Length: 366
Image (cartoon, rainbow, N blue to C red):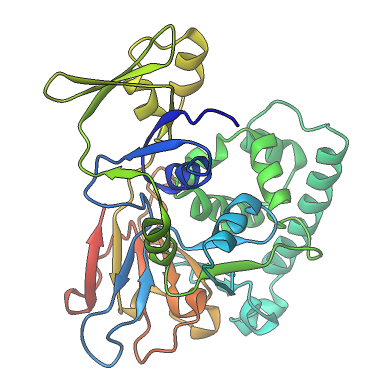
């Protein structure tokens, strides 16, 4: 029988939770989290008042799919946490030009009936098909050059309508990043992600899902079944390599030795914890940057496109006066995403320049 090792897992987001869940079968596991709660980006808000009281609404981690989340699916299955299929659609609304469309149905795509006869809009759709065909071909042949997405698009001669009114907004919504930064993405990284998530084809697309009862359901279930120990508000100052194992340094000059440690944190946090990082660790972990997004849970439908036919699950709003370097303004329509059967329309909005109606705000986060 393999000797049980003493293993520390630092970080109780999804990576740390899954690692601790798997390791507990054969080892003694201690899970450390600097916050006062488990779950990391998981953030489910339960509506407290009114006719929708008791409804769980996700504001952090929301969706998964059946193709690119195999390990997470296995984890949920082991914990007997159910999922449900979700509507995963995208809409675009430009306040300056008035353009609105949604990739939901033909009616949503032509939410503005005038676009049925618009050369610019029809040309954008044709260009999108051309881009998808070329991107798939280049990916399959390993012919995507080592250039930025912006350069790849310029080389392909794609219209500004397709680039500015679909591709960059879609990337901006996915990564919660400014359009300017999406343009600077490596073309291969961007295209491979789109291909893996079925965004370059109408066939064999992933089936998107949400966790029944909100994503906090899997965190609760993990806490109920975990056989190791959990330390919240953990004051870990660093990780030191030993000849045999590792040593954790805690606040108060306390130290403890483990056979191994799993750093399940953001890359920059992992690097800051390593007291003697190797050159490779410094190179790989030191390149990551993160965006801060102001998030509001609310019931103000004015954050959605003005035309209800253009409503989708993900709604990218290009606000009047917004610069390409500004953070992405996106509103998730949670009734669609989570299949909520509620009286109110629940929305999660990121980085909106115009304030949401104060009387409709339920929670705010950064």
